[in-house]
Amino acid sequence: MKIGLISDTHGSCSAWEAAIRGPLSGSEMILHAGDVLYHGPRNPLPEGYAAGELAEVMNQSAAPVLIAQGNCDSEVDQMVLNWPLQAPFAVYHCSLGPILIVHGHGHDSTSLVSLSKRMKASVVVTGHTHIPGIMYKDGVWLVNPGSPALPKGPSPVPTVGWLHDEGICVGHLDGGDILIHERW
Image (cartoon, rainbow, N blue to C red; front, side):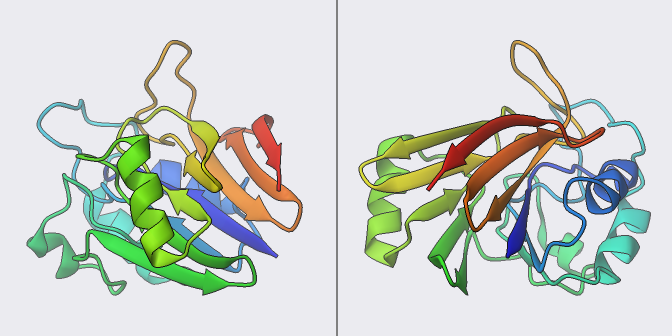
């Protein structure tokens, strides 16, 4: 089993394609934690910015894509995406149990754990900060795959994540070198 985790593509078709051809290849499902097409007024245009092209490529994805709406996603984005976009929360049910996907703006780790427990999910996938990280708190895994398009943080590198039978990984977009790996 491999479930791809991505967030904050912000219209970068080249970042999406690098993720799908690279670290996320072979994923049976892609969970996108929002900020899909628009770069947002606070962000620069990412390399490979082509929002319309990204929508077309995502629509043709071999793996299904489940998206939680980010703070930069709008109703008009849904007009070009075939995958549902307008819900602030999404839940994917798999052999690991329910996985909650939420962009993360307006939430801290405590509220995400509380929400996760109400949903009976042991994994929460977030985005928003563009900073990759994995945290285990009160029986819940909080995973932020970072951003393949507009990475931020002290050592910004483009990243994505994935879940597999043994645990959770966040890796570099180029080459897929694993930066963080946590076992279940």
